[in-house]
Length: 224
Image 1: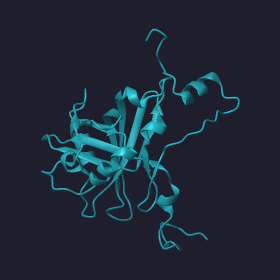
Image 2: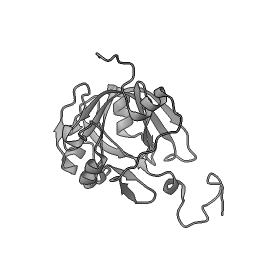
Image 3: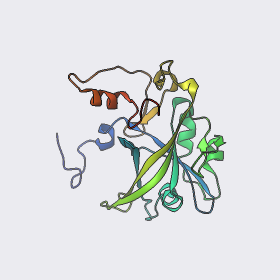
Image 4: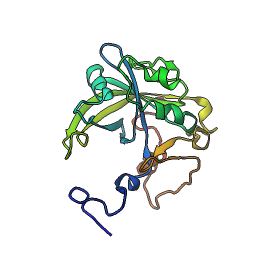
């Protein structure tokens, strides 16, 4: 069974595309407009790009009427947005924050989460989330789709500050995945939760490769 997804209807009742690009980490992004209006929304097309320096991206589809997402506009206008880790404990708040609300209604209030001031960004962080990135806007790349809603803005940013809940780290200073239980998007209406891990090391990898894979700091001296 095969088909051309750009030109043919799926031979299955539901397109398998998003069901195969899994699991997708969730960009639960808070931002604020140039007028001070807050926004909080989840994006399943979110990913890290590189680690030296840390860079991230998210892709936001337009609305059917051609309007661009508030997070994109806010990032472009203010130069900042915040990533908040989406966890199993916060799954309902993440889902509620995806609702299309009037501009005067805050997703923070509607989802029942607490604001916490960021250090660099005017956008608040979700206090209940254990990890946050303060992201400085770099650029937007627009990709035209076959439909209005298929057209996307791909936003790139550098991570300027990382906030960590010390209680969500292991004794050796790693993210305690089993405790935090991040959630991720699957296909259809499905999600998954990450609560177990296993380790594999690349045979024959040199020390630089091992350092990068292991998350060791780059570009710093032993004193720094």
